[in-house]
Length: 206
Ligand code: MN
Image 1 (spheres, rainbow, N blue to C red):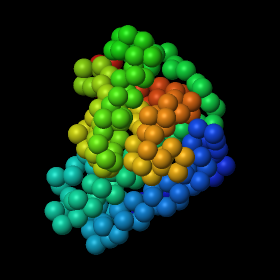
Image 2 (cartoon, rainbow, N blue to C red):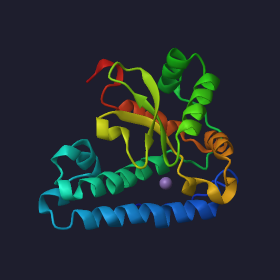
Image 3 (cartoon, rainbow, N blue to C red):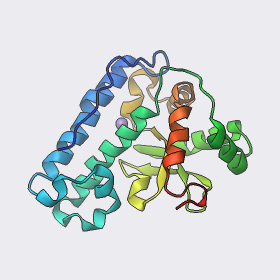
């Protein structure tokens, strides 16, 4: 049984409004969890698998539930990852290892932010923007549609941004660019550093 951690008490105002956070977590994320549980109900061999295991082995999931597991498992995994990236300790800066990789890959932080924003804005419709650690231990910006996730391709994301309208529409309406700008204020760079440390390919250790 997949479950949802609480986000109670975390305020990201004024950058992300509390009503959006509440609906996003309690309704949208909860629905992904519920629908994932429902999809795998009749499949005991899938019951004890972590959502990451399901997503990295989608080809082994029975065909009749594969799309449901992809969409709802992806939704569960992506949001679980995303909440940890949001912090009320505003305006953090990248930590040591993250910073050095950002500089070696993009030149400087501002260039990275510009390119990430371009990617986030270029994702047509619903989806996500990602910063992914490649097998060569470089950083790469990418996007996915819907709830597809880098883990489906066995790639480790270290940072991700939900660009579905449900993530920003109440406060920002059609202004996705303003939402991306606000994201930097609430981004938990400590978590990004931790994600980098945990990523499989980090600095040739895999
Ligand atoms: Mn979302």
